[in-house]
Amino acid sequence: MSLKKETTIKGIWEAFQKQHVDKGLTNKIFLGRKFFMFQINPFELMEHHLNKFGAMVDELDTIEATILEVVKVMVLLMSLLDNYQTLITSLESSKVKDRKWQDVNIRLFNERLVKKEKTETSQVGGEITLVAKPKVG
Image (cartoon, one colour):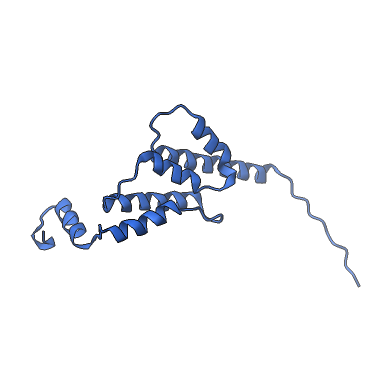
């Protein structure tokens, strides 16, 4: 397949992948390790973390390194900080049979918005007290 001979976007994309995407065992192991060791940075926004996770899933799909949906969910939940434990417990105890990682992604994003809203509300509703220091000298 040559990029020059292709006339559709899909054809061009498939030709590009065939030429440039390494689907070998070494790359699968490298990306698999990166995936299974994935952790959120405590100072990172949840949106950024979820985008990085989605990009890794897409990358693994591209090289045909199939990962079960339940494993994707587990890795995503294990990548979170302790302050998401309530949400994690809620998701673990729900009776959903086939949870998709995208569903967890949406719940985490919504949780982030709720936490952000609570923080903004407490900052607006709280009182600020200014104390003047006496001049010395």
